[in-house]
Length: 292
Image (cartoon, rainbow, N blue to C red; front, side):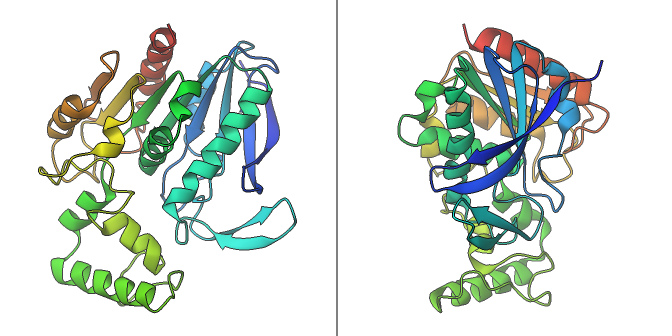
């Protein structure tokens, strides 16, 4: 059955305008907010097959462009002022403003229960948002789908000398107050500016929240989260630097809510292709119990 869908404009507290799609009823009791990741094509259209089937008159499902959508883009403020954004230029901590914009929209619509679902780097954004201020009081639960460390992944798969050179190059640009200058392709093959490279690839950055690759580091951001979490790993994640079982064990030691669930989907890849129904089922079951 086709799902009702309407475009929505999200205004963040800092007055940025973000595009979204609203599936489901006008006055739902609960809402699911999907937070996309960092891949070059991640946007409001990403992974809709995970969650759109869960939309109903009583449950809305919202997809939206956060500031890291696509690789390079333009976003506008309410004043009409525009600026460059996208995954290559995103400042990670601004994700809190983006998410707050969606939450405020839902609260104005009198939604009783709000659930956040993040895929890949979207999981870091949710964790960061929940760790700040009193944000958890307004969220009933959150699902983190393939919450792997970008730092651990790049350190594992990148050629060590190239990785060190790119780090030094990016640090030099930031020191010269050129944080949004792109790294040359000869230095790093991915399109990314200096501050974004350091955010993704520095062990002590605010973005390195799931620090299973650093046994001595205390994951303070993750440990601040007290609401129920659903953590789902892909059994054959091509971006993971270690087996899913090891990451699941680390999360089990560091998640505080006893109502949380950690699940590995066997033979699944990072994008959960051909496993979408399984993921949707896990999210649906989690939401049915997390808000109680």
